[in-house]
Length: 68
Image (cartoon, rainbow, N blue to C red; front, side, top):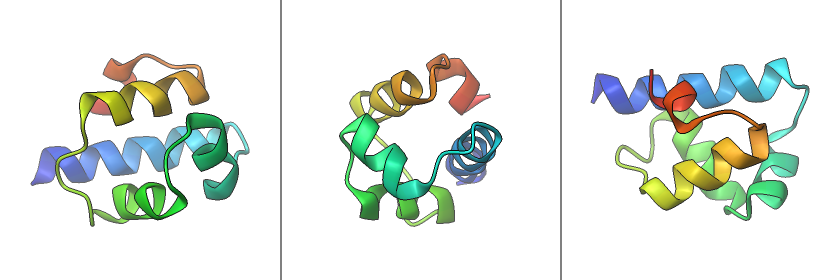
């Protein structure tokens, strides 16, 4: 579970560093707003690789940056 929580924290950190709101990220990544919130708060503990790819593309980072 710590790994998934780390993913959420990384998403939040990268999103905030780029000055992107959760709502904007959800639209750019084509991922539901609810999913972004749940990822960042640990409500989603096992995101799909497709979801991670979409978020990484939207934040202009590698999937590795979300995971590590």
